[in-house]
Amino acid sequence: MKDWDIKKLCEILEDCGKIALRHYECPAYEFKKDHSVVTVADVEIEQYLSSVLSSPEDSTFMIGEESSDSLPEDYIRAALRGTTWIVDPIDGTAPYSNRIPVWGTSIALARNGIIEEGAIYIPILKELIISSGPDIFYTDSFDGTASSLRKFHFTPFEFDAKGIISISQLLSKKGEVNMPNTVQAISSCVYSFTSMALGRYAAYVVKAKIWDIAAGWAILSKLGFSSITESGEALPLSLSGPFAEGPTRWAMPEHAVIAYGQETVNNVIKSLRFQ
Image 1: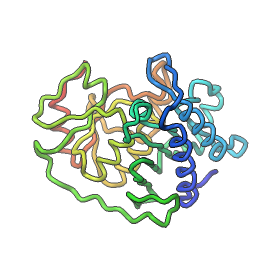
Image 2: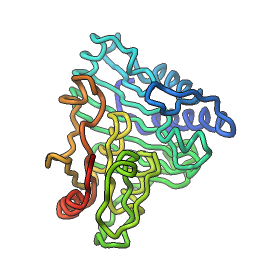
Image 3: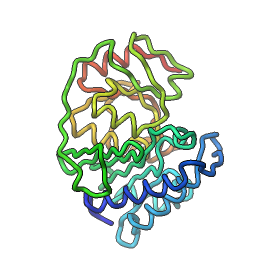
């Protein structure tokens, strides 16, 4: 599949949700080398996504969380230059495996190394948010088709001590947030990104891998959100640099703060202490 087709993607995301829900009550799981959880649903959904999205013979590739380690180098090089789907079959696997309903599936599309589009589906909440060119569409009553989608506009609000900040597991365990705001470390990028768009969260402090952030950051970027990393740079929508090279390939090398307004991200990043 080469093109970003909202109607078709809604059908694909619905299929992903059905697979996840079929295993939801008691998913078989195991632990990866980094001690994170992977379930049978993660693997099954990624295999399904590969079957409907990836077509290397047509220069259409896929990078997914569960298969990234097995990709040959020539495939990766071609993917970084071509039309590439970036997927997380179940983002928030820890909540999923404990039946906490903040998990979901994310799909992003990159062309020529630049992430252009994103979609997030959270099945238990029936929330779907998806980009199409400059526009964003959203529903909280997803019925498996694009007919339930409505054009979405973000409503800016003032950042103050009432706003909740979503933070990474790493920051929650080894860092410090010197602000009066409530913080949550829920282990779900899809829920955090969707909640940023909906105004549930006022800021997001994230350190994750490309499949965790690709769809969500594509969406928030189109809504006008700002970002800043620990080193003072904006969070890129590019697959180049640390995402493409080195021993930590696909991983963000440092935390980033995402919020609406550059002044807010600057203030939040100054309040954080990282280890």
